[in-house]
Image (cartoon, rainbow, N blue to C red):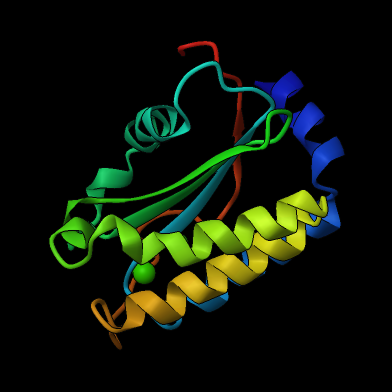
Length: 154
Ligand code: CA
Ligand code: CA
């Protein structure tokens, strides 16, 4: 785990990581949805399937409104996925995320990972606001910290 984190820190500097955490905080001021980012080097399966496993492992299904969103990125292969919990699926179709995926891809192609992720995360907050507005009694149900890992079926 520590090795994976150290490797990922080469990919996203500490400063970039804090910018992303700030973007998550900002997004969560628009919506009750809870956004997380998981980063790892490689993914040897379909990124959506891998993201689902990470989602479960992180306990992201524990939100009251089932509105957790995971941004998943395997940076060596430029594989990524954005998945939402069942509460979001009840309200929107997969196309809800297409705009974000296309935008992320355009930034990733330029190797502007941090900027692309920050913009996509903030956009997710704006988009989710329509279905899951921020509530005055909001709690931070899921940590805003980025998680790092390896694709070793752990
Ligand atoms: Ca919250
Ligand atoms: Ca949060």
